[in-house]
Length: 342
Image (tube, rainbow, N blue to C red; front, side, top):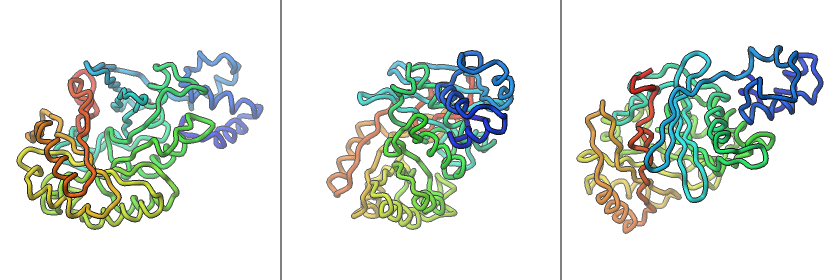
């Protein structure tokens, strides 16, 4: 798919078609604007005929709008796979939450994305497509991008699809394309330790977000199977390495599950393991997933816990819940259309 290619690769592709070099710029710009072939007026019909099998194909099969302004789309890809993406509106601009896999194999007990397991990885272009779509409907173009921030927090574990995600990050931040600063991109992982180190060594500077959700390995194993492979100590050492290489503060996500990880001793232990590290804790009252039996704490309790962490010297805030009424909030995304799993 042409959308998987960077500008240099598009130039090489156009050369194999025995077409003039300037066609590459026209083609790359058309892809970045997510134009259909029949919308591209500066490409001749014969050229479009040559590339039609490699051009992107997608269908928006659902587009929901929340009462708080959040938008969620379900995209059907060329092979029939469906992924969900979310547009969040803030005072500073628009953030797109993208999926990186069709489904997920991490098996976290509180997350809808893992209900049907992993079907396949998304390609770099399929991840990019989610941003390009929202940028287009918001009226963005090559000069005035409307999407300001990106979070890799939709369906899938980004570091379980490392090579495709790495290329996506380069495509999204490329000056010839959307030119989104990596400092405005957040990547959330449940803790695939080797690829945390790889992310740092490969020169990325995105905000690394760790889905921790427990202060010790024993408790974490009961809600996150990945804890059987990597200990919290290993994850935090990887975070220290990432911080040393990038200078970027780590974000710790902690979904508050009533009666599970919200106890005073859990919060004290969380503060203890994070003490002295350059990090910020993002507290999330667990969002409801009907197939799961776990319940979130009240927002009042979440703010109380944030205050407790602050008193113990840990920077903490409570995440604003957005899009819950359209199942677009954290932990609610899945391969779904019309209320049915796809």
